[in-house]
Each structure stands twice: as C-alpha cells, then as structure tokens.
Length: 453
Ligand code: SAH
Ligand code: SF4
Ligand code: F3S
Image 1: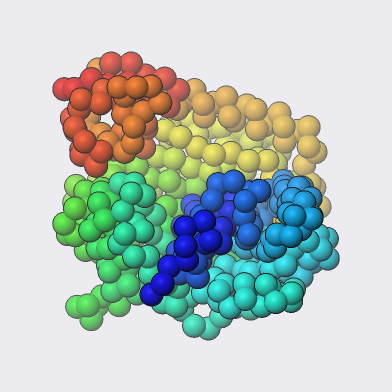
Image 2 (image 1 turned 45 degrees about the vertical axis):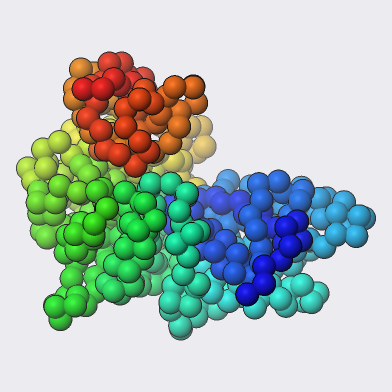
C-alpha cells in the first residue's frame, strides 16, 4: 500500500453533537475515512471534508446545525476562491429526520447521511466529489457495523484508556416526546462474537474501561456461544473475563429492561462500576402514562431499591423532562418528591421540546415557556444540591481511581472514580492506565482531589 506523501493527505474535520452513540459513530466514520486517505484535523479552515454528526432530540439542538452550516458555507466559498474543494456533509439524527430538506435550506451541503448507512460513506463521498448532491437515509438491511472498516490496533493505541462500544441501536419504545425511534430506527442488538472481538481489540490497545452504549442498552440480547439467549448481565460477565479490561459501564438504560440477571451482575461483577444512569423523566404517574413510559413511579422506586440491595454503593443518575403537555404544579411537585426519595448523584434535566412527528407535539395543554423555565430552575437547584452532597460525602474516603490523562496543572494527573467523578492526583502516583488507591482530601461540585493512600 502506498501512503499519500506528508501534507498531501486529504483532511477531514468532524464535529459531534448529541449523545455518546454519536461520539462512537464519529470515531467509526473517522476510521472509515482514514482508510480512504483522510486524516483528521481540528482546524475547520483546513478541511477538505467537513462532517457534522448531528442531534435531533430537542429543537435547539437541531436548529444549531443550521447556524453552523451558515458559517461553513462562507468557509467553503472562501476556500473555493483559493481553488480548494470542500465537501460539506451532515450525518446523524438531523440527517435521518430531515434528509433532502437540509440541502434545500442550506445548498452548500453536498452530502446527507443517516446513522444506518455510515458504511456507505466512502461511496457517498466519491459521488459528492463528482458534484452530485447525495442523500443516504434508507434503512440499510446489511449490518453497518460488519461493513464498517474495523479500526487497526495502531489507530486505537493512544486514544486513551477508556472507550465506548455500541452494542445496541435504535428504540421500539415510542415515548410520546421522543424522536429516537424515528431517527435511529427499531431496536437492533449486535452479536456477542462481534462485541467480544471489538472489546478484545480495545484491551490489546491498552483500554482499561469500556462503556457499552445503546439507546436502550439494557434491551440488548443475543445468542451466546453456549447456544443460550444472553441478556446484558451475561454479556457483561463475558467482557469482564477479557484480560486488561478492569472496568465496565453501560448507558442508557430503560427501567422496563432492568432484568434480574442485570441486577445480579451489579452484585457479582467487580468490574461493573457502581454507577447507573436510569432515566425516569417524571415523578407523576399521570405524566408517565401520557409519556408512554409504561411504568409507574412506584415501579421505579422499587427497582432502585432492588439495585441498591444488590450493590449498596451504586450511584444513581437520571434524566428529567419538565413541562410535558398537561403537567400541573402537582405533577411537578411529584417529580421533586421522587428526586428527594431517590437522591441522585448526577442528572440531566430538560424543558420539554415539542418534536415534529411525535404524538406529544400534537397534544393540547402545552405548558407555557415561563412555567417550564421556572420548573427547570427549581429542579436543577435540587439536583445540583444532591450532586454536591454526593461529592462532598467522598471527603476522607479511600477509593480506586483509574488514571486517564495528564492534568491541567504541571505535576497533576486526572483519574476517574468508580462513580464517574474526575479525581485530581499527583503525577507521582502510578502511570496512565493504572488503577490506584487514593485518599480524598478535598471535593468540588463534581471533582475530587486526592493524595496517595
Ligand atoms: N433512551 C433513553 C433516553 C434517550 S434521549 C431513555 O429512554 O431514557 C435522552 C434524554 O433526552 C431523555 O432521557 C429525555 O430526558 C430527553 N429528551 C428526549 N426527548 C425530549 C424532548 N422532546 N424534549 C425534552 N427532552 C427530551
Ligand atoms: Fe426515546 Fe423513550 Fe426510546 Fe428512550 S425509550 S430513546 S426516551 S423513545
Ligand atoms: Fe441526539 Fe440522535 Fe443521540 S437524536 S441524543 S444524537 S440518538
């Protein structure tokens, strides 16, 4: 194989919005483009290909893309005046949801590609470079993961000691507020062997911590090599056996898919970190029903109790939506009450954003923006207090930290606690990739400061 001469390689600038699945996908697309001779750059003005990997979850996220594309159009014109070609691509969930409409709104866009067709990116790129406007948003029948080039070991080395690994994609749950079932399609689980092979490759390249990803990661299921049907708990047990893999996490889970096997995995697997992101959205049964979450507040509280019984030090994190249509003061108070009952280590909260094509957007009784603002503020104040208290309770404790990278100050390194908190430690304490025992001397809103134990 002949490599392009230094400086002659084409450059790609990738910008990623939205969830961790997009982060993983951007990495896989970059790998695919590397095989086509594209080197990554973080200087957009140098890029022969600009690729935005977009998110459609809330209106603000989606609209942000168009202002970004406006800036890119100017950049493209500027480069063209210097005789340089720039291909502008839009990938991700806005691409899937809006398709050709994106090119209509911003004609500087050459290529629109949805998440199910990333393995066709090299071909689509060739067409775009020939001057065609390309829109690839069909749901492909072939397995995109199988067809995407596998990253070479040399490419993974140096990316860090933590990695994402998508094991499940799509969603069949159709919560009435959510676009994901429309942008990511129906639930698909990757086969066990494919996941194990990818995790082994990551481990060989020095990865110590793997986070399994899925829109509904705990809905993952697959035929195991023993012929039996595996759930996520069994898969985690298998991955924990891989030499080098010291820590496992998974996100995002749906309360309805937390089965006994997975709860037992929290009890039995030392490698499974005591941290669970389990969104509930609302503490009002009436609103949960209108959202089509298909569980009650009591179900959720009972579930958390069982998980805490299995793993007493598990930290719970969640997502909340305020101002879903019809949400009254009493409904919102029930959410605050649930938050007090559970006690969250961390959480994301959002104002309801009506999304075109979802049932929620059609409902009467949309909540006024000012009411949403006020509720969001109150909820976030409570959640932020809980987070600070959770962090403060770490003071004086001796914990394990995985050393991830150099710190911002000379002489420091940054590690990660089992509960996802950054841990600032002295650089004399072990090497990057080591798990070290440290004593917490001081705490911030989210960070821990530590000395060797
Ligand atoms: N599959 C996950 C969530 C994926 S979307 C689950 O079921 O929990 C991530 C988060 O975005 C959701 O948990 C929800 O809190 C928020 N979200 C989704 N649609 C939204 C909308 N229309 N308006 C506001 N927030 C939304
Ligand atoms: Fe969206 Fe609900 Fe599916 Fe989560 S479970 S991705 S919130 S439809
Ligand atoms: Fe956004 Fe798509 Fe993820 S809508 S949250 S990027 S699945």
